Image (cartoon, rainbow, N blue to C red; front, side):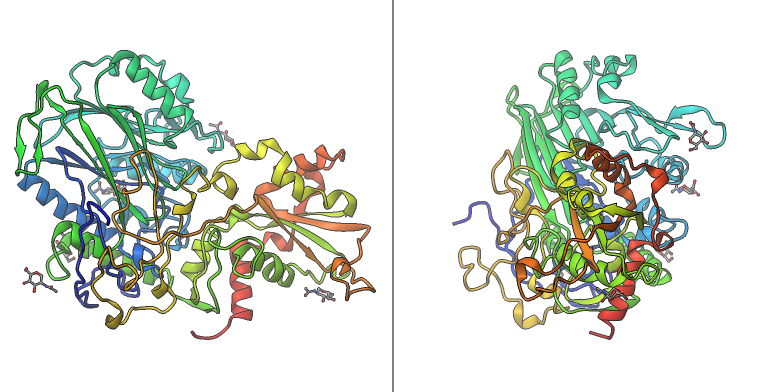
Length: 631
Ligand SMILES: *[C@@H]1O[C@H](CO)[C@@H](O)[C@H](O)[C@H]1NC(C)=O
Ligand SMILES: *[C@@H]1O[C@H](CO)[C@@H](O)[C@H](O)[C@H]1NC(C)=O
Ligand SMILES: *[C@@H]1O[C@H](CO)[C@@H](O)[C@H](O)[C@H]1NC(C)=O
Ligand SMILES: *[C@@H]1O[C@H](CO)[C@@H](O)[C@H](O)[C@H]1NC(C)=O
Ligand SMILES: *[C@@H]1O[C@H](CO)[C@@H](O)[C@H](O)[C@H]1NC(C)=O
């Protein structure tokens, strides 16, 4: 038996009434856990990385930013009816990673217009907002004013592009009182100790920021009912730990709620009985819901009985904290709002969905390059294997596309970081959108010619194991730093049967019974385990197996065939020298590894391969040639 589970019955989701992007599959009926409403409630998004159109091939995450706007408006209506509060939080990395963001010139031309339509109460910057000057300037000139008063930058400064003056990217903190309950909140917005930002921004290490006068004064404010620490910071990090200890050093008893991000996982962490932290996944797969009850209100203990649901009269009792990870689809949204396809969407939400649809159209994101014959997984298949996207790139794409005719006889050894491939490929249309979600980072290959093979063949092992600096590389390209994390690793990408078949026929959509899962098997998806147990996900899913992949893969191209080619142990002979190719992002690591091996190669020995052609272009060319045709 599954406690606390409400069986959501099948609702007829007609195509016409759906607000999500037109080509998305309908969400699948599934057993759901209700939202644990409280006195103060939050919706949290993080690491959306441009996925504001939702996932067009995955029903579980098919709601778009417009649907999220409708959802939050409906929950606000409910909060107002029951006189509780609802706040929206976003903790950064809104940019990079999806065609809706990356395909425009300049990048983000459409997404910042779309994003600002949501009414977010506390918003902060991620590291991706700061890699390039253009991006952080846009953040400073557009996003900060668009979320005026709500954008917090506790430890980021920027050189104003007009005056050249060093100024805070946004205000350091904010104090406000909630609308319905009168809860006094003091909020911060942090970024982890990020170092690879462009030189027009300055990220102050958290250890320094917490010594600043303004911060020390803020945490001594006794007229505060809740500290709200938002940050593009992992929950189990030294940065949040320092902030937690600094606040607790001054206020041993005041409740603290943290919202974090960056590691792309669902996570909930207990720091103490009155301090908790929530992280809400990635790529618009998850809307985090958080509630706190039993908070003081403007110095008074709360005494209001909310709609008979939440008894807040227990003075002196420790506040209670509850979390829920909502799968981002309209089936979940309808359920949690007790509304349906007819009455759920708001006018504002619908408008934003159409705005997204027209942006996608203008960017031609549905332009098809070919048809993927099967699913290829980043982490849901072992590497190496036929289902692994990395094996596919290594065995097919790189050998076919990097076999330059300039040097037809030269063997090549190609090193590529797995983090450059960001997402799975689903059986079915391979579109411009697919290309950007799989390979969003502009970047091509560089080469060093005529490297002794005895040296080159050792690089993969070093890059994957021994260059300790690799561990300090940003989450951007080195996958091992990314979603791989303690205990949560099985909660990665969900993908349902229907993703490959397009829209589900109604005959598949029968009511599900939680205790009868054999009759209607659960769809695969997040099955999160966190500090509060295993009941965090709103949707009951079957577990997905998750496989760790190495930092880098190696492709050997045009190696001399062995005379003894029937022996699988000895298919090729060792060449004397190879042209060493590598993704340009990892150049420093490759050079470091080469030095580690006792050579003295430097940047002067390197040059762009194939005029630095983008890997995204290489990928789409391959698909165009090898997977041509309609699905
Ligand atoms: C958002 O920022 C842009 C650029 O400064 C401005 O044109 C626009 O009016 C702003 N919109 C809102 C809603 O603040
Ligand atoms: C940032 O670097 C560029 C060149 O890389 C340089 O021209 C510029 O002066 C630097 N800006 C600052 C604020 O240091
Ligand atoms: C949605 O709910 C309303 C009110 O209960 C009802 O009139 C309408 O028929 C429902 N629509 C669907 C599609 O179930
Ligand atoms: C939705 O769009 C229509 C047509 O552009 C406009 O008239 C209306 O004011 C918009 N409504 C909202 C709530 O944004
Ligand atoms: C690469 O090019 C060489 C020379 O043209 C050719 O012999 C070889 O078969 C090619 N390899 C691949 C994998 O296309």
